[in-house]
Length: 97
Image (cartoon, rainbow, N blue to C red; front, side, top):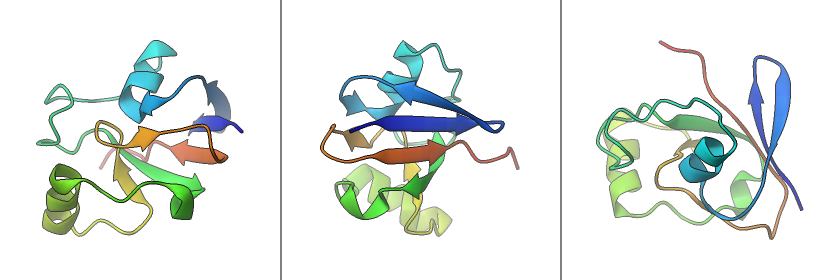
């Protein structure tokens, strides 16, 4: 199974399990996280390109942010999303608004 992050048309494989934010930072991928991973800013929002149905449900903090900002099913917070290697996943960082 594999986890990829798409940035500017390039796919970068992420290794390991844990919070998606931590996997990105370990791979030296600059992903915004203004609040330090506390789910209060939304700057680490990612889009799930593949595997959304295989991800865990949003935790309480992520659900609150998703409700406040009207996230789609495919929008997740990298700081709250726990990833396992049980499925293939592809994420992308959306363009800055």
